[in-house]
Length: 329
Image (tube, rainbow, N blue to C red):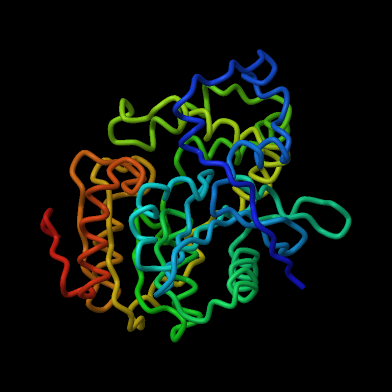
């Protein structure tokens, strides 16, 4: 049975407004890991809560009231990627966002013996179903980025009456070559060594690669990504997860049967998922509309939240017919 408890009332904004404490050489090289309780202390927010699911204390933020929106982040990200968008949407709506395992404050799922679970699609299906059931969510709008986009549209296919609207932001789903920073974990040597040695410089390079304009990334955001990736157990979990990321096995033809208002948002400078996939989603999902953001990378809601919010407001107010593509799909 899931149990829910309030999180620590601590705003991330206060962290970014002050000078960041230096990390030790061992920490910068990834020789040490950041303990889970330390991540909880640093990165929970005023709306943070925890629910026990599949052996893990899953971190989520639940704010506002009204129609429900569920936000699901991508690979190696966290619920914080939605901060600025959620801050606006929570006025007049109930906004729920979570740290997917093995990322963020949540970290890896573990078996009854303590072994780290492999986060493949069947496991994510079981996880997201259990999470929503624990919160009593029977119908919601789903907004997903990257891996979170895949989990969102897959949930819509499996629970058609439970999804009111769907927003896919640089979503995974179609066959693709994994980004080099993820594909590294297909190497047995990297999988073996990364839990004991993974310099933060590599993680910072990966985060900069996700942005269309890396100059937009502030020091606190970079530190957050690094510390979550260096979180206790996360690297070992990623090493088990990456070899299962085979998008050729997914049935994307089923998207043609979706009858849910859908908005596809995409960064034109996405270096992780081909921009051509935006058109694939828009063409396959009946009535879907799409918007391409010039100069923006893989995480538009984090890099250009004001542009994303403009399109989300129109979509949530009027449905897919109320959104027009400014980039001409």
